[in-house]
Image (cartoon, protein in one colour):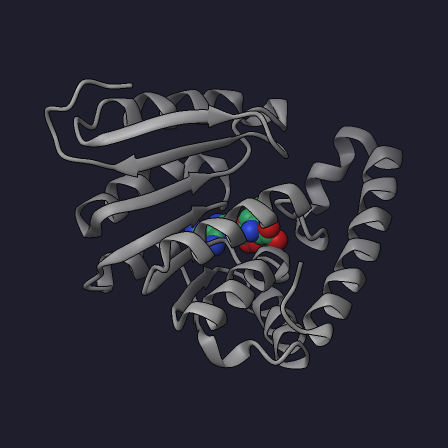
Length: 213
Ligand SMILES: C[S@@+](CC[C@H](N)C(=O)[O-])C[C@H]1O[C@@H](n2cnc3c(N)ncnc32)[C@H](O)[C@@H]1O
């Protein structure tokens, strides 16, 4: 699925780390939440493949990722971005996570299509003039609605927002409910829940006034 063998081999290493993380999280149970920063918390291969395909088909110019973490999803975004001449702007609060992500993407030969931004995502989105053609929203869930409000005025026509964790983990359900209601309240966003990975809300900007599908 990845375009180069280098990217494919970095993906394999991420998958191995994700499997080890999962085993450890199962062992820790709810106590794992306290050390969530040690884990990749990846979107998973199915969602990664969806994002990759969307980029290949839609050919966006500016892709925004909110929540780099250790770079699992960035690898998918950057691999497709490189193929279509796009840039991935990725935002993350934890500098050590983003440094790891950058190192992995350098090894994959993809770091040059990524604009690495470290700090608070809402503030950094507010400081960016936009436009954003495709957005992956995957930071801490209480920030989904503030992120939506920051990103929304800067969406290009027919922009796409993919928001992760709509179904799992259960602990995020209330924040996710508020996010989905906020998305549905925008007259020009067509939106649907895709039951893949941890659940993706896929929202497409469309002319206001159209009946919701
Ligand atoms: C679920 S993880 C992202 C996983 C990543 N998209 C992937 O698939 O590999 C969420 C990330 O959001 C980051 N984060 C939390 N609050 C943030 C904020 N205010 N600004 C930027 N990043 C933030 C966390 O540090 C964490 O790494």
